Amino acid sequence: MIPTAAPIIVEKWAKIHIPLNLQWQYAALLLAGPYIGEYFGMYQQGPWDKLVHLYSGFAIGFGIIFTWGIILRKYQLWLPLWVEIAILIVTKGFIAMLWEVAEFFWDLVLGTSAQDHNFDTMTDMMLGTLPSIFTGWAVARYRTTGRFAYVGWLLTAPQPPSLLKS
Image (cartoon, rainbow, N blue to C red; front, side):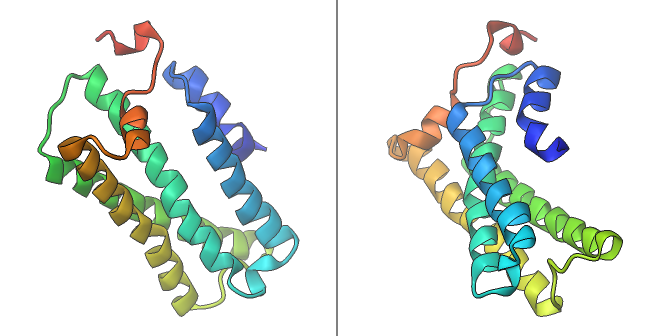
């Protein structure tokens, strides 16, 4: 229940507005992963698990970019481009690791079977982190050439005026 309400909780707590397209990406991730993946046993059938982890890299990467844009504006920060990209990749890698720890925990506590073995865990973390390299590249392209307008929109997504006051 709490994971499905996370965007609402975050909006109320942080006093931000999460764009609807990010909320849809989050909903698709929850639907594909814990619900379809585990409830219908798709994790054990074919490449479903790998596709979910790959998709998570993009969906969560876009969420990180959105969050980063709010932080940059709120605190009027400017960092070198390579630092922004490093933060994006490291943050997504950390989230991928936390996801795998959560899968391990739920497998132990609830008797689920989200993890098969070490090879599965390592490939899941790699597939979850690799898209952040692409999203980092997209941020670099936006910052240097103005391309990838979606990334630019995430970095400057409209927020309540009170949020940006220090």
